[in-house]
Structures are given as C-alpha cells and as structure tokens.
Image (cartoon, rainbow, N blue to C red; front, side):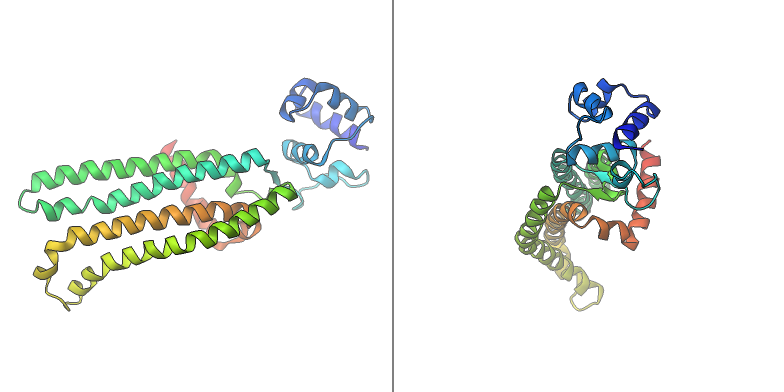
Length: 264
C-alpha cells in the first residue's frame, strides 16, 4: 500500500472530507487531492501532523512494506505555536501556584498580629486562605489545557527543538541565582522557628518578630515556586523522554487524576 492509498484509507476511516482534513493541516483541498492521487508529497511538518492526527507511526505512512503497529514510534507532534502557547500558559500557571501557596503561608500572620482577638484573626486568616486556594485551583484549570504535553512522547521540528534547548540552558543560568535568593529567604525565615523549637532561644524573645520571619518565608516561597516552574516548563519540552521515564511521573499522574475528578 502506497502513501497515497494509506492517506485515502485513513481519511475515510476517520470520516473526514478532503476539505476538513485540509483545514486541520492548514493547507488546501487541492493539496490533499494531489497527495491522494500520488501527484505530490507533503512536507515533513505535514507528515508529522498526519501521523499525530491519525495516531500512526511515520514508518507506516512512509514505507510501503511496514505495517501499522503500536510500537514506540508514535509521538505527539508539537508545533512551534503550540510550544510557545504552552510556555506562556505555564508562566501564568506558575504565577497562580506561587501566589496561592504564598498566600496560604502568609495567612498565618494575622494570628500573631491579633492574638488577643480570635474573631478578627480567624476572619482574616479565612479570607486570605480562600484567595490562596482559589489561586491554586485556577492554576490547575489553566494547566489542564496542555496536560497531554506532560503525558505523551513529543515530536518537534528539529530546528525549533534546537532553539528551545538553547533557551532552556540560558534560562537555567539566569534563574539559578534567583532560586538561591528564594531558598535563602525561606531558610532565613525558618531558622528562628527552629531555634525556638530546639529551645536555643526563648520563645518570648522571637515571637513578636514571627510576622517578619513568616514574610521572609512567603516571599522566598513565591520566588522559588515561580522560578522553578519556569525552568520545569522548558525541561518538559526539551527533556521529554527523561520526563516521561521519571519514576515520580507515575505518582504525579495519580495526583492529577484525583484533582481532575475533584474539579470535574
């Protein structure tokens, strides 16, 4: 079976007209007609899109002697537009996550500021915590649009992949110092609590300054989560195979499934 015959067969099996297939591939009906009549051949990008659309391997499309199989030749084709959309979405998501977790940490401050009035600090804590949880939920909703990129093996245009790798290495270098600042802020805010817990310093000496220490942890957590998420977004694209094979990935899939059930 030739490529033209396979294309015709796959299009019919999926109930697509030449016009609808052309629309999905961002090409013309005439181009589809020529491919099916053996009068032309699609470019590499269109071949990858066809393989992704019909869920077949490139070998199946290109080689007359190769039968369709479920081997690991399959992959999800990621166009440049989709990759850039994902990175932009992850920047928004990281903002929601970092803000949400930071607000949850910050919500403990009213207890120390208004300790003498339980009603006031309880209302303020609930108010801040609700905003924090809301920000986290919005982050999960935003992230859900590109969930498939974190679950499937990805195929890129090689030139675009090289560009992404360069940007990934550049961002890692720039963000390392920022992450260190975030970690230092968290440690600086956490040490006083450790000193009190270990009874190295009397609690009545440091308790009045707890709001300041918590503020350090809040800022540090925001910086750390926001920056690490930015790096991780590029890592998932550039080091996709490593990401798929990570042992922790199976755990995260379970977590995401549970969150999807809660949000659905």
